[in-house]
Image 1 (cartoon, rainbow, N blue to C red):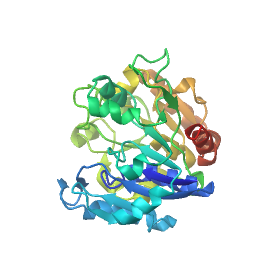
Image 2: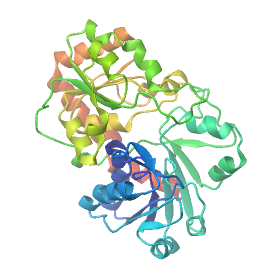
Image 3: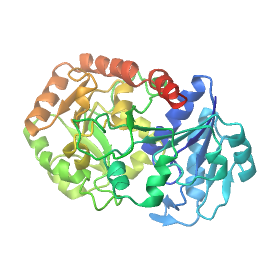
Length: 373
């Protein structure tokens, strides 16, 4: 198939965001499909060098190219600026690609437009990486937003419990199908020992999106603030949060921007970590969404165990060896101790879970089968 894939690499030019789209593109190509990346959100890009949203898309377009080029996709992308100007592939080239495309995959709002060239693609799917927030936004009933989602043939979500009795988030007229972020495990696997004897993660303390939903990660993290004082395990969080507060409580914060500057830097940080300790956004936890982190999948693929807060995902994935769930500080302390007690076994189990549950060769074929049904 010829697949137009819409993502947000330039709008949010961080390593973790880049990997989300990159692994779809590389994974789809490995299955024999032709892929082209487009980004058309109507928004300006964030420029970390200026620490501001910029009218000039140069930082974002450079980041897109530097992400895709090492994987043979340097000539297969187009960024549509807020003013309609195309960077990378021209408008004419994108229209020509779409004219023969079989499928549009929209990840996380990689385009919010139904331009004629997108609308003519025979099959169209949306992949929701931010469950709860997306459904609550639809439930507000803003006409253009609801109509936007109506034009997809299938809606997929990383929230495994969305639309089931386990989760009370309203879905209205829409049916959300479960999927996971695909991981190209070969790009993460490493035989090198961890460079840091620390449990780490990469996290955003608070986001400015969906401010009317009290769903940020800080609210959950504060429940576990004293955890380092209660365990011999050591931590090193890449976080854009209150560094002084976190340092005082033993979390060993490091600047998230440096860790996330590029796809390679992000991967190096994860591969160099002993394991992940991850807290989820409050909305994911409180609404029992079943969300599971693409970042955690990358830790597992690198052979790094993960101890992450349960959002309801433990009903859908193997938990206990390599991947452990917690809901309370006491469960977190127990999980840390279990990983420390037999680290090699948990590391092997982590890599196995990544291969069996998240590898792109397993995740993508059923998604494509449903997409064209």
